[in-house]
Length: 233
DNA sequence: GCCTTGAGTACTTAGGTACG
DNA sequence: CGTACCTAAGTACTCAAGGC
Image (spheres, rainbow, N blue to C red):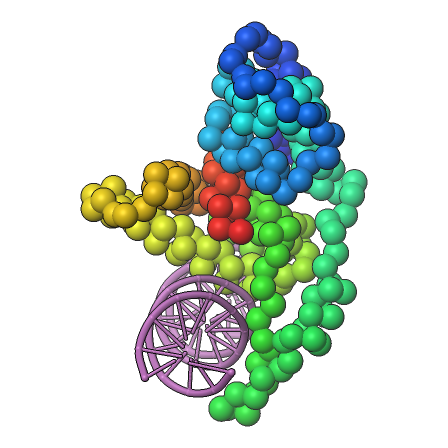
């Protein structure tokens, strides 16, 4: 039985009572990048059991109705479940990776005479799958994450990516911590981003420190990781 | 516009550990 | 004991910023 990250029915049954919301703009059914980002950030910020979750998100997404937001969350949940259950395959980036390697990642001659392939940047999709794998299998099970989630990367690559990822989280956490001690010229928005990054980073690092696979316990940990990463991209 | 430099990131490798 | 895997540390590369 695969873990369900959130119970849609319980969420949908939550009270729809009145929270103040700005006057509606023109509603759109398409979700653009910015809206998705706001949506993800909101999920990272609010607990999924939070009362009036959808109303709070809707305040941030004036061009979306509450039913649209519910549907979007449901779609996201379905995607995760279908990937987890193997009903749908993870998007295969092998072809593009190969293409990219040929285009921009030629083998590089090393001092030792061996050839070293130039690095292929991780896409946001790959990192999202990595985070889902991390949530599902826990820190350390890079083989499972590679085979079942990030199929475009081998276990060594996944491990390497994870290593730098957690290092980055720690660094950003330390920086954010410093920024709270030593005020800077940052704008309030930037300061907010730093504090958010610190909060999410520390949570993600804490989650990652748990023995595998118990890390896959709460959806907020998943979204903390998800959120902190997407702040970067 | 070109060069230098430093930060960021992907990749490699050596050492350690768990398992059959 | 051999194999497979993970971790930590180091290496190589890209790119943006700054100086000239």
